[in-house]
Length: 377
Image (cartoon, rainbow, N blue to C red; front, top):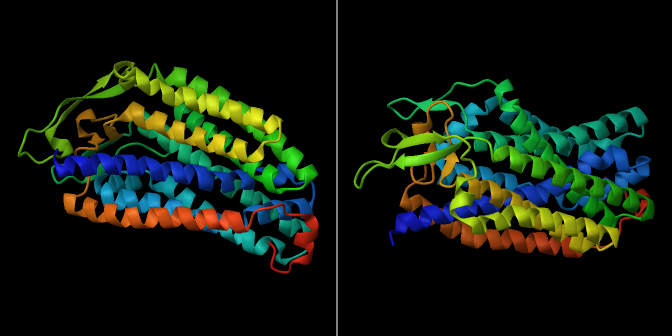
């Protein structure tokens, strides 16, 4: 089998792994930020919530860097097209990510309730907004993005910011927020004391229930959306570019891959079952199991979207034949090979130090600990 083909498929799978890692680890922290004002009844409880994720949240941001870096290096045409088309959205994401560490560092520097409340709401926005954008971006890419190329392969985005907030994309965004709330709630339940833990469990159950409803509604909605079909690819020896292919929109064909390969239905089914089991685990206070089942839910959700789109990475709704696929938007074989080598080294290292950090920082965080520690958030 051709080495280029193998590396391309491997990098498509690795892109999914990075998106899953981002959703699970960053989504957990964002869920805590989203819940901060609602499960913390007083300032001490909110400080406990912040200190539960305090040792981990900045390390988890590496998944953002990995995701952006992987797209830049392995899928440069996707990177250039997406980041220019979603420019305003990226700025919103960037600013929310900038104020997030400020909230952690500065919130408790002054005793003023007004000061701390302002930072609490900032942490809420910087938790909910990125996950809303994350899900909405997936929803937009599933439907197709309004862009095209000229003869130089310069991309032109022809949509507007408000078009990105279409109903299906907003539904996907809310689904993402709901699952992050589930993960954040299970995290707080695992490490908080009784009062905060009970409210966090209730929030996690609500988040899981909302996710299940929105995910099922989104599935029926997606079944009626147009899909994309790669009708003709460039021949052998012809440059594999979006200008050398024919793609047609397929009415109601979003789930065509599922019809062709019924085994793929295991992905959305497992997404629903894992979150249902996770909610049951929360009911019997199996906190660790509930967290891992939520992580499995995220894996299956991202897998569901990826399986529906393959081989497309970023379809064009205005010029379907200019759509970006795994075959025409990847980097060179040399670049993908080097990147794979670095990935084989660094992904295990990231998993190792993340696991070590959670092991060292295991256990409950109490109000007394937070009040007596001058270095606590």
